[in-house]
Length: 356
Image 1 (cartoon, helix red, strand yellow):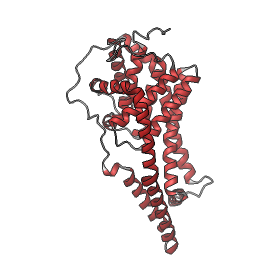
Image 2 (cartoon, one colour; image 1 turned 90 degrees about the vertical axis):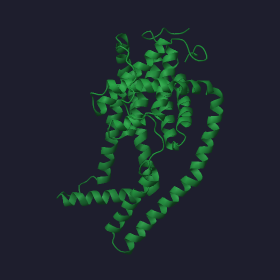
Image 3 (cartoon, helix red, strand yellow; image 1 turned 30 degrees about the vertical axis):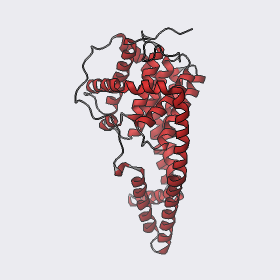
Image 4 (cartoon, one colour; image 1 turned 45 degrees about the vertical axis):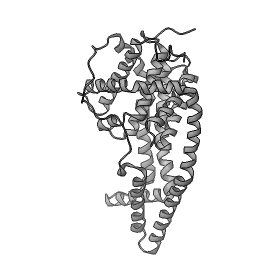
């Protein structure tokens, strides 16, 4: 037996629209997020995903099943729309979706599930970066951070202190992501109620702007934004730090060890792990495409309308700045997408949507 609609919006159509928005966030909203000029744009992408997953849980009748299905569809759409996406990005999406399915399937409260998911999703992003850097550079990275931190403290007239600079760095870094996760989780839990109130008093429709927002397409990153260039910069800094801390043959030898380690790790990743991961993901795509091919096609077909809705939301949020603009833009975009689900309630290209 189907549950009643929420605010006049068919639940299944709402879940479809929210899944399409999640896919668009992963595959095509990069230009807008960069235009917001907020620090740590990866946090904004992850936070947007958490909000959308929480909304899927709010509208879905079977929360865990709906979020798991949405995760698979988003992965397939992301691969089709952004074929150059690196494998760690798929890991992040998979973690967000699977964690969301588990949390909302077990916890009775959407607000509590959203709060925990916000923390876990942001922690996963932070831990993934730290793990990659540690594997690539080894303990030399943290020794360099510690040495430079102590040198700065000495120049400022401070003592060595009981806590190492590396510990302070990790505390501040993880603390930043913890605060961001709590804010994200609180927002994701509060937005469903705000959405219901806004839908009860909708703003008058307005045409999509012709040139009012940045390009949505992500495309390939520029050379200085890619991982090999960033890894090379960090490697050069580590080499310079090693030779500065230990002048002479010892410094050169330590720098050479760091260099050889980084090259070895990159070689293993480029020629062994990445091809293996891509082969496994291609198998996953072929298998799941046979099951969710129609849903993927419908999701991709919704992108033009959602891009137009993004243009309207972008214009409505133009008076705000930075994170506030992101929040207003996201609210407006979700409302417009769900209003579209209400207008074609119960309809789709292949007939009524299946219960979720």
